Image (tube, rainbow, N blue to C red; front, side, top):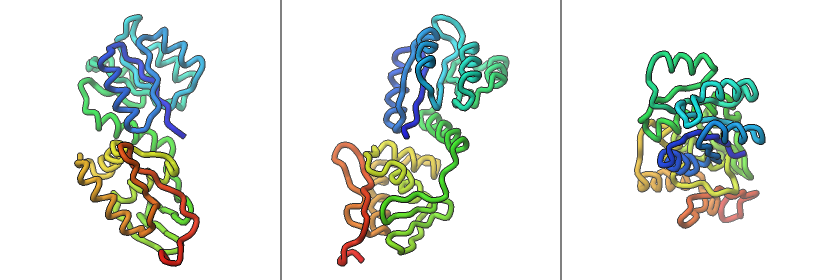
Length: 230
């Protein structure tokens, strides 16, 4: 299920940039330019993550954050703000905020923090399966039609992402973010191509990881190997 993010940000340029960043990472984003709009939005829908600026045209978002946490205590609340005073940070955290990020911030740092909060709230399953592929993320081991294969931590991250989205397109940008989360290093598109090539070679199942032109990749369900593939 796609993670839903509520972004409350009045600066249009900042909001558009964050929307693009988050949607590219695979999140569904709803944006509100002020508190009044945000109140209407949360009256109708639940969100997994809320990213709130503090200073908005119709007031500060602390009261809204308090209301949000009271109504949806499991929503991950993150303040994104230029306010870096100790009193503001303490006030935000006392309200139950899960994080407080001061602008300007690095895009990949934001994505990594969101991912870490989500993973703590929803721990990864002990196994991920699709067809003949079963991955055990904790041990970096994948089983393909009964054949055990050891992966690197980075390969496990990539395969986990593809398995979690089996049958659906996963963008190159999303996979690059997975590499960053696994290694804390920013890599190039060419490096991603190399990593995926190595992963395909280890799995040795033609058509399992499909390249989608101008889109990304998709893991297809393979129910059995042909005689030539065994």
